[in-house]
Length: 238
Image (cartoon, rainbow, N blue to C red; front, top):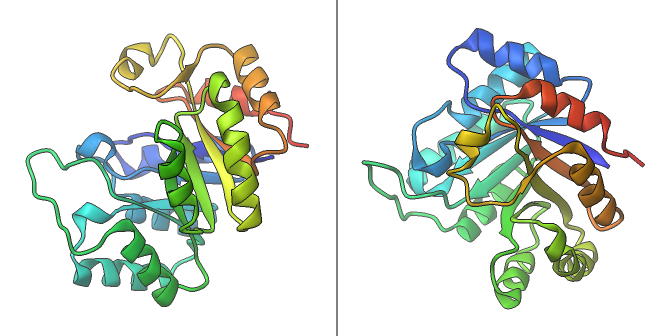
């Protein structure tokens, strides 16, 4: 069971390195989202470059396709080619607040371009279990290297099992995104529509129910890195 930690928003390079250092040795990869909810935050690719160079960390960078024209996206990918980054998630992205949407690339087109420009980098996509089964399978048929699975809950494990069979046939690795709610982040997560886990026992039960279906999990616990590290110790690595 591979463990991936989501790195939340930071305000300085020092804070970035400090928080990432807490996760090294506990998690296999650090995942850096890019402008969640379409609001400004640390640039995912820049943060990934810093972490991979300064800490030799395994990092997953995100790219919001709606923010890039063809020139910018190609330049970004050529930058990745020079880096130690080996995993890249392509997503359409939420509409940018107070800005414009760029329509040069679809996610599918961006993935095809990435495979041409950065063939050594694993390219991933997002997969929401709230979509219809046909929409989910249409996404799986794009055959990315891996997928971050959103909106998993205990009542959707059966759906995940159906998806996992086709994903396995296509060589796609699945990593469900699991959000941990604590006293420190409850107010923030109230604005997030995805399912949340409330308590480590509930986490253990969910992870146990998907064992054998996925290659790992992506854990997120905004503003509570202590609980994030503790949660990692409760996941059976297999």
